[in-house]
Length: 423
Image: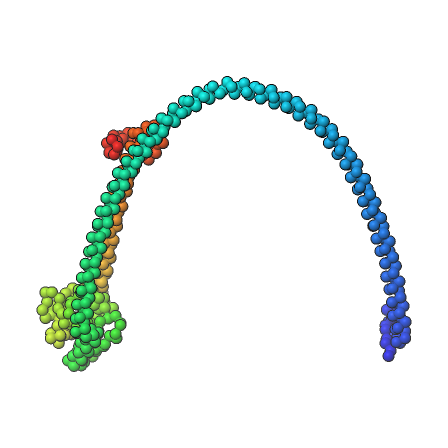
């Protein structure tokens, strides 16, 4: 096997045989081993020098410590002698001071005994005043406790009365529900009965007015039960009638505003309720707040009359087309049913809001009045207790700024003093 190498100087290729390569490798390995042995020898010498220096440093450190120990011992002896001298001088000064203090203490002992005797007298007096104050406070607390007990008893009686009233109302409501359930069980499903009446209404309108549009309002959707579109002989729509069927034993006034809202949503000219139970004041049919109410027997007659009115109004409107100005169109809109229905809807919403606001205002005023009475009662009792303590303790009682009269103007002071509960 032969390898070639390039000379770095001239660039010539030199063939290197395997024997030459082995010799070169052996020479290089010998040179490296010699270099390693030389470096190991240098490293050993340096380690010996470092150990020698460390030993010299240890010997020097021991000598320094020995010298320091000698100096410390000498200094301790000197300080001990000085401390002994200072201690003797200090003890002598303290003995002289103690003798002076004993002399002064003997003089002060007599004064202290006199002061103690006076303090004992004052303490007995304070204990007597304390007992009297505790007696007064206990009496006041007993009175307040009796008042609180009476108030609690009154409130408990009132609560029992309210609970009894609630129970009676609950019993009445339960009786009413029982009667209602009995009535429903006898009559069957109200929803099924209403659907029957609604189907009868649709069939009747389709039978008598085949040229009109009779649209059923699906169950659950807003807008009544049947939307009746009135068409003339030319096929033009002349108006809309919204029908609502009710088959109940009791009339509810809440049906009227709901149907008016549905009428506005459907843009119907008229709204009619077909019911089995008429409101008070109506026998067969009538109009209440813009909503027509009729029994099933008068259904077709009322439908014919109102339908004829819508046809006549549409005929008159068509005859006037092309002759009206914007002011006349505006006037027609203002006197028409759409504007009236919009205004009625706004007024009904504001009326409902006004009723809710008045109810909230009455409730809040009632709560405020109750809280105000409770606060007044607490303030009167507090000021009364403070006044009783002030009369007993005098100026030794700590002053409470909000219960004093110093911050009240002079012109109002007499009135406040007359109202004070402790005068």
